[in-house]
Length: 448
Image 1 (cartoon, helix red, strand yellow):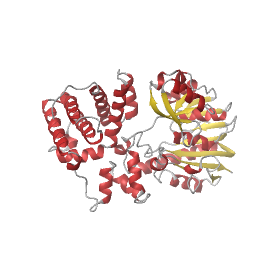
Image 2: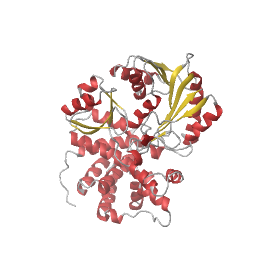
Image 3: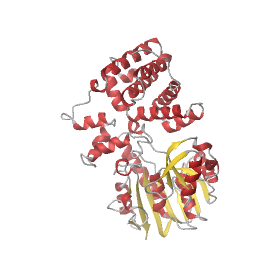
Image 4: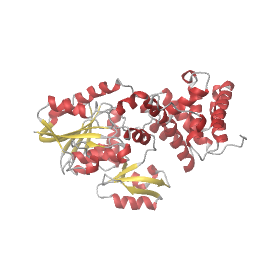
């Protein structure tokens, strides 16, 4: 494996390594850290793309990478310094999953990244990654599927064992691997145009060398393909002609379907994407957005101002105890959840979540519904939404709420959404392997 001078893409590896170390040592999200780091680093578009692929790919495949590294190391992986561990994962990810990067470049760059941890660290990283490169994928075995099929799935598709076991009880044997594989795919960048403005926005973006395709399910969604410029530098962004919003998220606002002039409460509003969408759908109506943090409320108002949504009002308040009296035509409870439907966008979540998180979050979701239900006027609508696939946080929460609040009944989502994203019980339900979207769940409830 001859040494050659490192290419400029090594800077992309440095950015990726820094983000991975921060993700490992803080509770920050990779997408936020990466965006801030890229904004402060003058990288060419190809290197920005490489840094993004390295961060998301290394985090998504971390379980499989750690399985192989544990077999290659004499020291237990958790005992290594975080920068060394991140350099090993980054290097092995390139060796196993990025065919266009030469092995020498992956090894040399990882050795350089580990240099700050000391001479012993560089020797360790060099030796381990060279052994991995020599062995190749065929020489790095996976668990025996015949002996333990769930362990094989967990390692092969890089998910925690407890999550694979849980989903094995909810998806059949053919569908489960497809879900796990889809969770490791790259996240798509999706824009939301103003209602009825998608075609003109698409033409404007094309003139700026930004390729887009219309979304499959949401009428205002544009999926970004190749971007010839940073989207936030475009006049269309400064002029408020688009927002960044995942397509499944856009479907939630469509399920609410606020009429023109409606009064809407968004009880868990930050960062404000659905708030602004609801304001666009409600026209000259009023959308009150709640967030318990002053910074969150300020962010919501700033987004609404950029998107020309004057009907938005932000209130620093807890949705479990909203300081409001006058009822609303529609209330959205887009509740905090495990986020396990967004593993493409937040791959680190699979390593942070624990089984005990689910009942804790379900209790929070139930309290948010109970706190906001009195604010729905007679005949009004309450929509409950989460971006997760776990029944404890979706159907179970709705079932318990309806049992405790007979004033509400479940309304079928069919009249408001494409049939492909509505399940047999009438819920909005999307999944990465079925729709190519984040995994979302939403229920539309009508107050008697």
